[in-house]
Length: 235
Image (cartoon, one colour):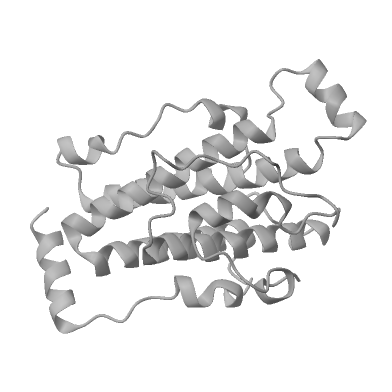
């Protein structure tokens, strides 16, 4: 199986770096090059130095590499029958998740954490769809599909939607951090990524490739008191 060390000796350190370079990650054709048009992050939180940004970059790198490796081995790589996480064309046209939903309404922290997980699942679907569309963009078969079906996504559309989904996940993370503290937000992010890993690959596939970035955080007594007080105040 592909690992971070074998396929990417210098793992991406930020989400913006991942989004700029992921299209050729683990590509079947080693001569495939990155597109010349780079994504625009000027109106997003992507690329702002933060531990959450690094966690997303490293974990999504591990997810993408493992998905491709398991796909080549004809093993479950998109959730299987239990929790499928397959791309749908509707993913490109979902209404934007306005983070003001969390600010203007008394939304419990647990719901914000759950919504962050949904945005991460969406981001993973879009990342895989963007990769596959980019790898096949020059094949005659893919060009015929594009001509015959307007619903076949182009990699540019998938990457654009992916940037939006990952930016929304980061904004929800920052909202969790403001309301519940950094430990609570980081723990929610890591937990959601562990759940997604198990959903996509099954509980028996080791987390070794991303263990450092998704393992539970230790908690101090003061952090525990703060988190408990926050959660009890919402009951």
